[in-house]
Length: 338
Image (tube, rainbow, N blue to C red; front, top):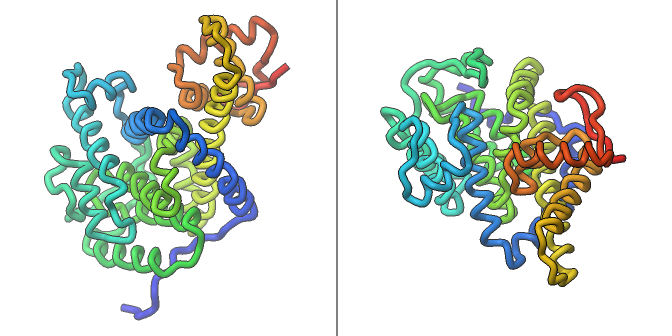
């Protein structure tokens, strides 16, 4: 074997550099929100949405309401495996701040928590060859032979510790390389997304409370397309661009929704009627659509705290009032605020 240190192949695009600058500004605004009076409540909400997002990407059908009930210790009607997936994700994300994201042993601990009761060997590298699948069950690529996994993971963690690149870049590269290696028989996607959050959180604590996984879920097909594009290119630049964009969207959508809510609260009005509540929701949706015309229903639901059905109802109302219009198809189109 070569004694040269492993360096993952990747290119940092101009787009990525611009996104990093925008994220740096957005995380400061998000910090102020999380340090506010609603910070604890928002972290709890985001914890639930993170669990829903990361498990839904893998096909879990449980709703936020069902997940909330499970975490409260209530009985929920649903497939037992999906309930166990939620419990495992909850345990792993609850422990995330205790993990050293530069430790292989801690990675194994995290996988053990994530997949307890779901796989035969939780917290152990795979002992068989596997193919990496997308959400539709298509093979994205064949993972390296299982015999190579320990050395590949060791090399990846050595690069992670030595690299002087920004954590925003390193976390994306790690996420892609981890999925390429596919070190476990199951739970690789959930563990890879958890570990990117662990890396980001070790840099800026605010990332522990940012449900990036939920936004990735809203753009699930793009997620797999970015993986395929990176594999085809032989370097993970496309995946870096994708993940940084979704990190920024998460921070911007949350920040705008909460800033609007805070501004309305500061007006000290005594008339907290349903009409005023609806007006606040309308303003949130309009503001987000102005800054992100291609925002999805799932992203609006995530930002406003509404269900997707609730977002549809508000959009229909805004359309009827001629305040917004849709340009182009549901997929690939965008919103215009009149």
